[in-house]
Image (cartoon, rainbow, N blue to C red):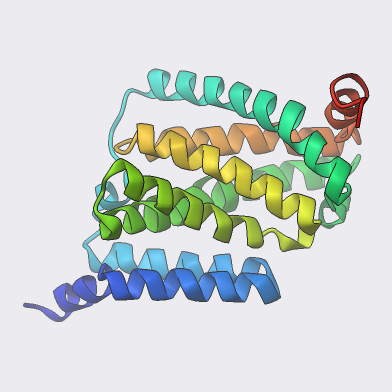
Length: 232
């Protein structure tokens, strides 16, 4: 066995995967996105060790139009379930999600466009690669690759994802964890096509970032609280 194969065996072992997830979770609580950045380094190193086998993380060739159509439908579902129903209810009890970290894109077209580009690379691709392709799939393998195993893997990886957004306040943690659960279910249903999750994540974030750029990020929440949750 070559040195690279030994490293691959170590990086894909249950002990390493669980240790990395635990470390990312701990770091995220205290430093936020630093934990995610560490995760990016680990998955890239793992990808190198397994000789750039992208299929290990669920990235394979799939029909583009079919993938895009599914992503658009999933995005509409997330907007309906989270933005219209779940998030407005959560914010009634835990306060408004703290989006001050994104104030720089409000009304600033250049910052908005640059942020969109960064988002596609870091959030859409990077976070799906890490939290679904690495964490979720890795835990599901460790737990036995059954439906129950995937359920546990989705909950654990989504919780870590939620706390990686602690800078958004408790409402941000809860809602991002909830959306991550949806992303996890999407990946479970499309285990050989992580691109669906990547495109869904990206399109959904473009929607949210555009509302912030237009300073209309509260339009859906305010409407829902006034017309759906008016009795609370």
